[in-house]
Length: 171
Image 1 (cartoon, rainbow, N blue to C red):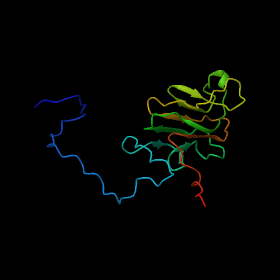
Image 2 (cartoon, helix red, strand yellow; image 1 turned 90 degrees about the horizontal axis):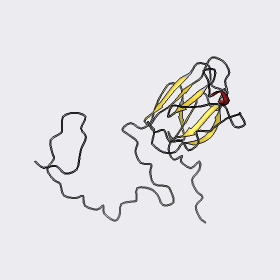
Image 3 (tube, rainbow, N blue to C red; image 1 turned 135 degrees about the vertical axis):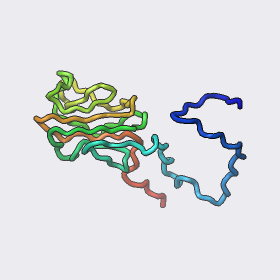
């Protein structure tokens, strides 16, 4: 048998299926996959989609994730791992954690870690850098709060956020 291209298998190679004819086009009376005026459906993530281990929470139909208890203050000594993220720029809707960015978000800070970079503090904090636009290259981000101060936390969209309300129909 001759193969063209390449294929990576993580187990025994499945038997080859006989060639099939291309699928026939759908009948013209079927509705489109998305109603007119709405964005197309999001492309699928890896099987199962994004996953959370710990008390962080999905919002906006699993397009966004928040620190525990957001928009109220999160608690002490909480840990979350958000994995299997779409490799796309993050959209930060809100970010306010207890911490000191000028000290590199030391161990006495509540930190969100993406690509081994620690994010803490809030707008106006000396040295604050937002994770806005960062791409989680390994598909993960992690959250850890320490046993001292607490703040509102964060809400970050990890995929295209759905509209908050449908667009108005023309009269």
